[in-house]
Image 1 (cartoon, rainbow, N blue to C red):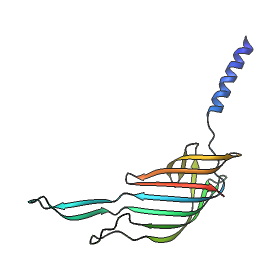
Image 2 (cartoon, one colour):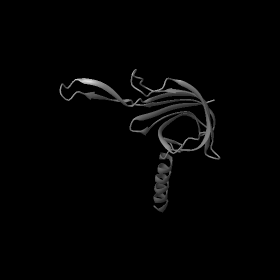
Image 3 (cartoon, rainbow, N blue to C red):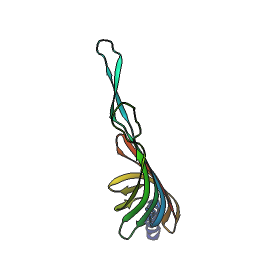
Length: 162
């Protein structure tokens, strides 16, 4: 009877342990693509006597950026190194209204801390929802992630192990 109780407890313990998913490891270099989109906001100025729209006013021109490059993860130091090319500019440009910028290319590089769980990725203190795929010896060969930097902006990325 005692052995049956011990085996039952042990079986329940093992079931709980296997039910908890371990966080996939991000290690090595990944080809990465990132998209950052922020909404534009436009207001109107109306004539109070007629109610007709007389002018547009840009509160924010929004932003669109596309980045491609490599992201190298070092799990021992929990740092990620980016080397990439970014093209970014305003989401909206309205002729005759100041503000907004045309698309321009720049080189991006740097190192930052990261961490992850089985469903999140944290980079530069920004938490993203993440999905990992093709786990080989605990290392994720693929990760896709999305997060909102502000109520107007969303960033999405895909990284594939090289």
